[in-house]
Image (cartoon, rainbow, N blue to C red; front, side, top):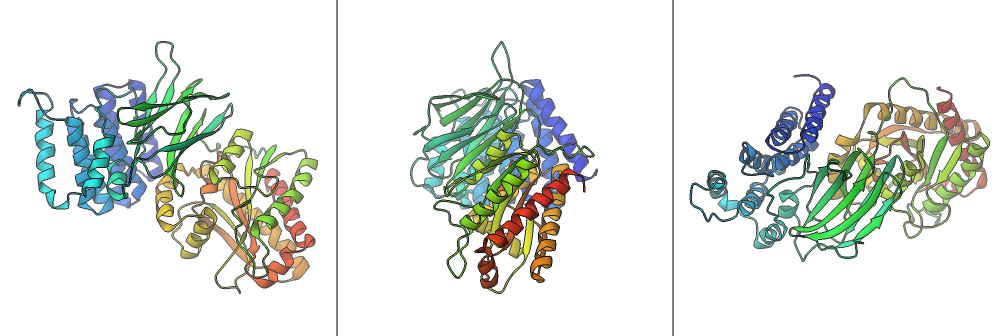
Length: 509
C-alpha cells in the first residue's frame, strides 16, 4: 500500500471528483470508494479519525437509499460505527436511523426500497440484545429526515448515530447564537448550541446563477436564538438559519468556490465552520514572509488561567508580556494584532479566527504553565498535534479548559487538519522561541531549564492558517518563577525573546 501521504492525496482527489459529479449514482459511488480507503487506513494504522471519516463518507454515499450500492454503504457505516466504539448499541442506533429513513412499505415487496429494508431488518434482529434506551431512539426519530435527493456533492462531518446513542438525551438541543469572523480570504462561523447535537454537512456547488453554499443540518435541534439571515462581508456573504423537517439548517452562502472544514468543540458545545479560498498550509521551500503577526495573551476575564502560590494570575502576566512585544515588532515594520488588549474573556475559537481574518503570517499564544508539583520549572513550546504523553495531555486539558472526553474528540479533528509544511514551520518557530528565551534566562539568572518542543492538542491552535505556537514561558506554580514573573524585568525578558525569535524566523534562521 502507498505511504499515508500518497493515500490521502488519492482519496482527496476522489472526494473532489465526487463534488464535481454534482450528485447522482456516480457521485455516491465515489464517496463510497473514499470511505473504503479511509476504513482500510483505519484497519491498518488504527487512527480513529480515519474510521470517523470513513463512516461519514459511507453516510453520504447512502443518502439516496434507492440508488445502487447505497444500502451497502448504510450497512458499512453501521458496522464501522460499532467497530470504532466497541459497542454494538452504536451499530444498532445507526441501523435504526437507516430503518426510519426507509419508512414503512405501502407498495409490497416490489417496492424499490424493499430489498434494503429486509437487509436492515435482518441486521437489527441480530443486534436486538444491544438495543439502546428509548430516549436515544426517540432522539433519532426526531432527527430523521427523508432524504430523497442529496445536494450535489454533499458530505458529512458529524458523528451521527454515534452521538445520538452515546449522549444523554434530556430535551431538544437549541441554537443559542451564531458567531462569525468574516474576511475576504477566510471566514469562521461558530454555531453555539446548548447541548451536543448530531450534525451533517452538505456542499451545494454554484448552478443556474445561484452561488455555492455550505449547509449544516443539526438533527432534532431548535433554531432558537439564531438570526434568520445574517449578512456578512467577505468570502461568506450570508449565514441563513431556518427550521427543516429534521431540525435546524444553517446555510453559508459563498461568493465563490471555497475549501471548508467543519468540526465540533465542547463545553459549551459548538459547531465550527472554517471556510477559505485555499486549503491551509504553505508550500514547502518558500520564503518566510512575516508582515503580520497575531499575539494571543492566554486566558482573560473570568478565565484566570493558572495562579501562583502568592496569587499572581497567568492572564495578567501573559497580557503584559504581549503588550511589551507589540511595540518592538511594530518598530520592525510588522503589523501586529492582539486577540485581547485588556482583561476580557475571548473564546478559543475566536482567537484563531481573528488571526485568520487578519491574514496573519504567524500566531503566538503566550501562557504561563502550572504543575501540581510546585518544584517543576522550565520553558516549553507547543505545536498542534495529538500526542498521548500524559504531561502534555494535562497541559492541553488545562489550556483548553476541557475534560478528557472533549480532548478525545479533539484528536479526531487534529488528524485531519494537520499539514506537513505548516507543522514544519510551526516547529521551527517553536524551536526559536525556546532558544531565544532560554539563552536570555541563562545569561541573566544562570538557571535556564529547556523544557523542549512538544506536540499536543490545543483548541486555540485548531484551524490556524499560518504557523502557530503556544509558548509556555515558565511555571507560575513555582514560587521562584512566580516571584520573577511579578517583576517588569522578567516579563520584558520574555517580550524581547519573542521579538528576537520572530526576527530570526523572518530572516530564515
